Length: 159
Image 1: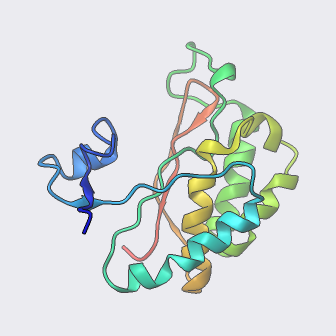
Image 2: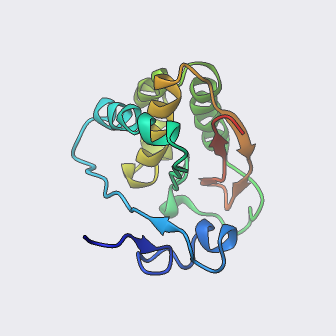
Image 3: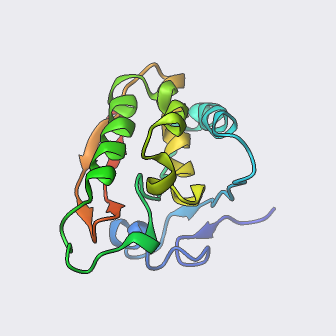
């Protein structure tokens, strides 16, 4: 039987898990994302993880709501562009209201600039799927902006 890796063994050393569990003594399973799949696919995958959560498994999705590295502005170390605020608010409305609606933000006017590549946004769809499966809206855990084009907003379910 194959042993699960720890946070260090699966390449998460410099991530949030290192700060939460510095001894790296918890089992971790890392999911790969398929950015070629539509957002509804990822939402459904998140919903399918719900039974694990019900068994006490902590599920973490790391990424950024707004993640445009090409638009970074060093003059705004703690600020966000207007478009970043608008898109972050649109995603937040879905997450804190009806997480199942999160895929609809693809139609938001600022989507293309806020999410030039989906790799940092897709993990939020897993959390939205979990929320939808539990019929539970998310709560904002942390928010803020950095370098104009990065949103640091993080959500939680049921803390």
